[in-house]
Amino acid sequence: MDMFKKVPVREQDPKVRATNFEEVCYGYNKEEAVQEAQRCIGCKNAKCIEGCPVSIDIPGFIGKVKTGEIEEAYKILSQYTSLPATCGRVCPQENQCEGRCVRGIKGEAVSIGKLERFVADAAAENNYSQQAPAPSNGHKIAIVGSGPAGLACAGELARMGCDVTIFEALHEPGGVLRYGIPEFRLPKQRIVAREINNVTDLGVKIETNVVIGKAVTVDQLIDEEGFEAVFIGSGAGLPKFMGIDGENANGVFSANEYLTRNNLMSAYRDEYDTPIHGGKKVAVVGGGNVAMDAARTALRLGAEVHIVYRRSEAELPARVEEVHHAKEEGIIFDLLTNPVKIYEDENGWVSGLECVRMELGEPDESGRRRPQEIPGSNFVLDVDTVIMSLGTSPNPLISSTTKGLEVNKWKCIVADEENGKTTKEGVYAGGDAVTGAATVILAMGAGKHAAHAIYDYVTNK
Image (cartoon, rainbow, N blue to C red; front, side):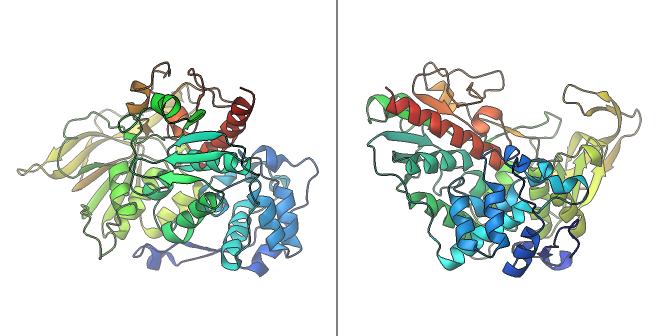
């Protein structure tokens, strides 16, 4: 065994998976997981823990995998996270825990994410029990949103004995885990539903189809319904557009809508009547993980797909793994390319996307080199569908109906980075509602930190 290289993980063949919505990565079996765990040297001052937003005892659970004690490994994991099978699949470990791994200095980092996934999946297959919650303390907490921030906050508070109710606007819980991430990356029934059940098994109640700010306000939750504190983890579901000519044409979608139709409303399944415009030639504008998800979804629905991104491959914000998978499956990357106009046919449908070639200049405030247009380089991309994946911002409904809740110029809730405390007494917030669109694990970290601040608040009033 080469201790400097990861144990390879099995995946579906690219040509096969490009035609289905089954999970791409098969994950480790027990033999492979134990072998990969042997590569962990069990650092006493573990940098990987510092890189984890929820501070999992990574050497601890991997140490148990190393000796084949998988149930013990799960007991350790479940003390720190409510969503290990989810995080093992979709978190950017290469920039977090694995990015700090000492093994990575002279070789490849330990596959922490794949090991986390293995332990969580083994726990489900073998019905391992998670850590039991503390006895009830009678403190009543409301959570707005059942995405990763809300689930993490709810799970943590429930473990501490609080009476927690989650209010979810949609008809199914899970937030972005349910509507945003495709089945081929994160199976909904087998993984998402199971991990939500783990949270409800702790005593957390979930009420769906409740739009906070409309059905009931944050103030009413506190003043009339007896909740001692409220955590807002409502995400960032308001899509952004470019504002170019033709953006209102038929066949132009936000990635948010496109993925919601396919993931939450199962448009890809024959037995569902959810309409979705697959398109024959699709351009996805953007370079993040959501853009990759939209592009790979459109491919599976039968389209030729182009990623249109104004910077180079080195600046792509998507995970390297997602870009690699997209290329393997046949996605075409039109890099250093920026849309300037959408053309319509006589019936108002997309008939082409005019773009301009770009070159990279000096770095901007983000540290990435600023793209600049190359004069006279305009051309038209032959497409019939355009999907805009340019980021999202929070819906202003909650902030506009909650007195004393301050937002910034991007309409994100202003909250303390350490504990999620907002400008309104008893109200905390975290995740994309505060930061704008970010990662699942960062949202979970915010929810977990806020949970401890909320517990201190309600027990010391």
